Image (cartoon, rainbow, N blue to C red; front, side, top):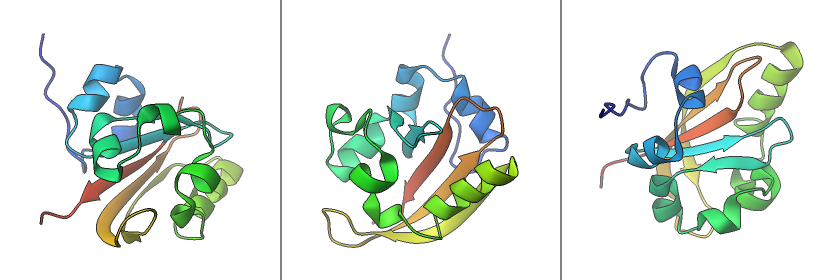
Length: 130
């Protein structure tokens, strides 16, 4: 049975991603970084690995905002996850962003997803067409 991959802006995406297998994550055409309450990365799909030039072995288990993507350790990204966790509220925001770690600055759209009681929190990365 083939499951149609969902899009970056699909509704109720956090809950749908919580049900994905590693193969389904790797079939998506945007970056997916999933992490737990302690910010350790638990999901890192093939699209993001290739685009960022970081292997899953290097990223999985590492703290997202300090070791993997310190360029996101700010009020625009990391703080929104902290606030949602503290308020026990849903986070589903899409922001324009510029990634700067280990690469020339790259304009992206980030979708920040967190549901109270969800198994993961997610940063989705949609790179602009070149």
